[in-house]
View (spheres, rainbow, N blue to C red):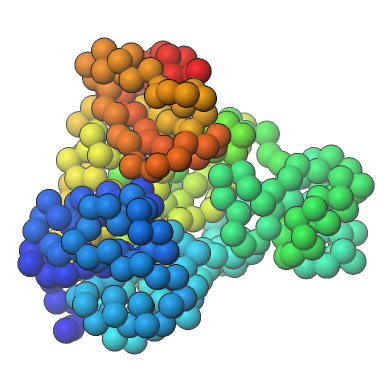
Length: 381
């Protein structure tokens, strides 16, 4: 099938990864009449629970990957750490989006920051440390305090440590296993924002409204839309995100996180070649959600409207909300008529684990945030 031919309801689509992002992709695809496959090592993963065809296998299982490729008209991913060799195997026999090159870049912090700089985006000062004898050169390039981050496999605050001295840095590098890292200067931030966009096979991009994000212990806590930042800054963030996507000849949904400095400079932080936690608000507050856009881009269909229907605050629900012997205070959520609870179907609640989220709608962003903060307090055990 030609890469640009549209796939329509009745076609078969697959997703590598069975977590909550895969679950919502499957829900969007099934609602629109597509047949769905999911590949995941866990037979009870959230997306595996609801797809028509659950394929249990490792992400580097060549037989499972070949079966997925043969069964599907197109395949996408749920997370960026799928081995590049697995994606190349899929791409050799069926349509895949996002492009393998984009995923490979997203797997390496140095590569993604270098790509951003090549396209003219600013980043915080950083240096690469691959061995302990790189530390002195890194400290000459980056002021302390700084954050040491593994170049690969870090997320939600994992694989990173703050360093205030050379001794801290030496200890942190050893604690992280001596693997390749980036040392990134810690910036005095005014805000953190993210842009979630969809780019089609025809090169057209549409951006969802910019979200303003607050993280706690490295994990996203809330995303508020519209962002409480200058409109010109939001427009600039969207422009830079599209520029980044164009530079990758990207197809699919892409999230770009930016730091906003005290003087309103936008600094590229990181990319996610997939739907993003900060885009979950689109499930209830925009005409088209990020997961339907993922499907539309994969299938070379026209992209949907990104119009915001209501101000909204997305509140993450972590495993910390589960008491030792019981469920969270769900009645408090249902008492809020403008709160929309989404649970992911995960069997075990653990501290820091994303179990669901709540989209709180409001007359304005402040009202939506106030509702989210009230519910957070109600869900604290």
